[in-house]
Length: 298
Image (cartoon, rainbow, N blue to C red; front, side, top):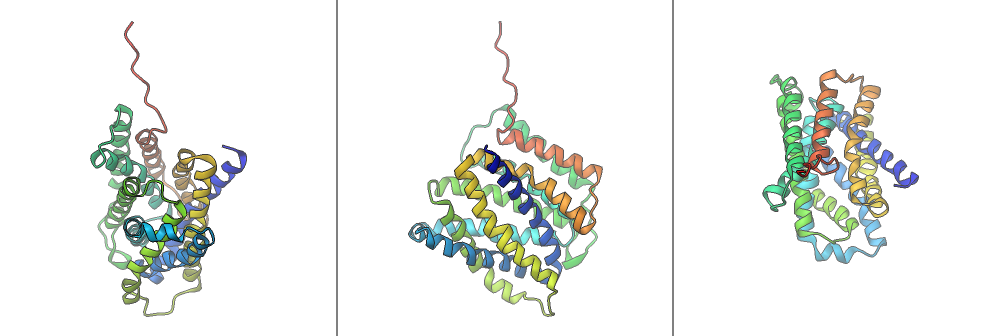
């Protein structure tokens, strides 16, 4: 990658790492449904005009059904699940679990699309899952906290969200290959907005929301969703999909740093070890790290 691409990759990692911080700051005041709705609605207001300016609205109309499905399983449901988890889990811990999304992508490609996985990628799946289990083992308490959530439910919500990300990646690959990325980004946010509108209205906070929570919602929508999508697809165009997807490995570090600096959430040795195991599994499962080939007999 060029130096500019590397800087943009670091910026994207910092932005997406901050999204977990903003969910933490806004979840208690807004609740999961209202905050997730504001996130996708704000992103839609940013991305749709950009799509129109690019002349790609016909692409959205042509593929709207499949794009709507992606909006539900890649934005609406995962955002709600992560925001629920934000009520009880730290910023860094959520981001570490989020790093398993490529592992789920490899898993669904294997069981659904019939993609063959070599020994290294299968080992990566096993290592990644063991990292999740090990990390969750000491964190999955059942004491109910904010919003009726417990740490165990929060971890389950994170795992469910990342599994949906993996499913969405393979659905997109199967149904939307070759579709303009900006049409997919804008259309998915539009469908997520439509799905969450009525539930968010029903669950809208009954008491005034703090300025901090409103600021978090605005940054989630404009910075962490709208502008982040633009930056991500720009990276794919300039540096390739493989280089762009490597942002997965940067997000946990930035999220842990933001949580420590802003929320005072000091990372534990166990969390850092679990993060290392999960990222190792992710690198193997996605093929970014190759397992040594068996030597040929002499």
